[in-house]
Picture 1 (tube, helix red, strand yellow):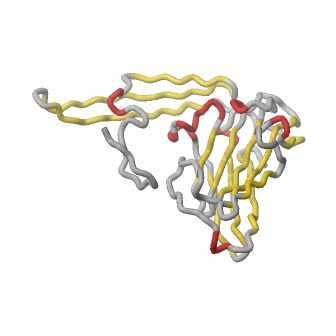
Picture 2 (picture 1 turned 90 degrees about the vertical axis):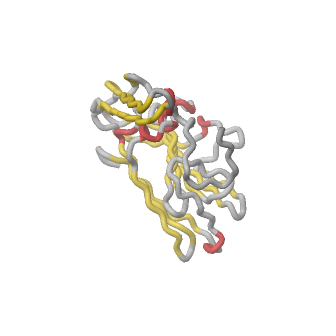
Length: 221
């Protein structure tokens, strides 16, 4: 790690690389049941609580999924940019991640501290779930590994704005135009303020159906 990023690299060995499964290409989709993946998890506050834990997952073609503290990544626009790449090779697959400190919540402490850390891998062909530090079937986070000597960089407050415009046509009323903005401000690593001006309830999250590919049928009301 350095003052900007956490860097992760791995080599997932596989004696049958032709059997590696990697189909999902849409960022933000959880790889449940149909893709090989490797995940990196960090608990900067070392509380062993799920709410303080972030994890980053990639499949063998580099598709990304993240869960951040406070469910922030539920809204993909608030997730922030982190980089990942992966490639299937002759003896398995390899991957790399660069995770900016700026998208994480972490305690405002100076000097070396201890954080929770773990990595896990799922091989779909064999259904083998491997963990670097095994926390058991009950997923007891207090059994995860300890990252000793990590130094958090100085925190810089960030302001994110997400504006929108919506143009439409209503029978009997003619054309319509709406605009507004969502705002997210983090003055400290542990405090986040979220607000909205003129929210667009006609186009709320998950209410408007996309036209992207999916593996199951969808009913559009």
